Length: 159
Image 1 (cartoon, rainbow, N blue to C red):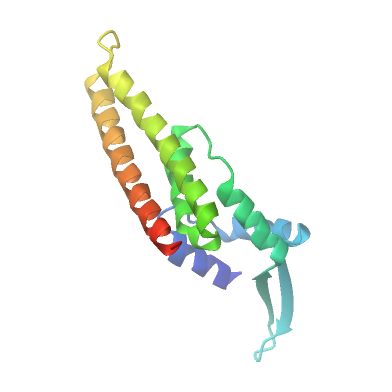
Image 2 (tube, rainbow, N blue to C red; image 1 turned 120 degrees about the vertical axis):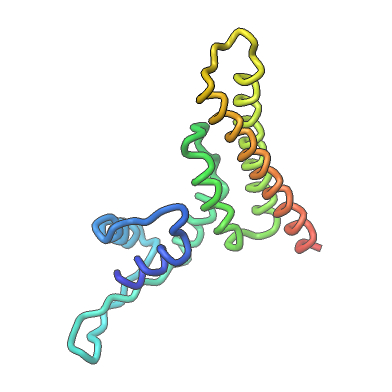
């Protein structure tokens, strides 16, 4: 479990930093769902070590989750979309193209909503809300540019 925690921290720490108390139940659920398999081996020091590996069913589930629509909630969108983008290598070129398209469209919707609030002359947006909304618009613009770059890279890799 230590190695699983270390791998998550090394690869996904900007997005999540789960505790050992969160990892153990997740591994149990994944094993019950046959998404991972566990192999128990006695180490040289006489301690029981558990090695986990992803099953074929687990890879299929990962692909399904990557292609699945993202939440419409802007608070969840960016962090979940970033994790999906980090895992894009598990998809084939066509699946990646679909995922990039969906992510880019939802980012554009969130950007549009923030811009509408900023540009609505009848909306009483406070100074602080305006600053946060301006930042959100910039963040979405940058994120859309990032996804467009990934789309181009993916289109070039598919040739």
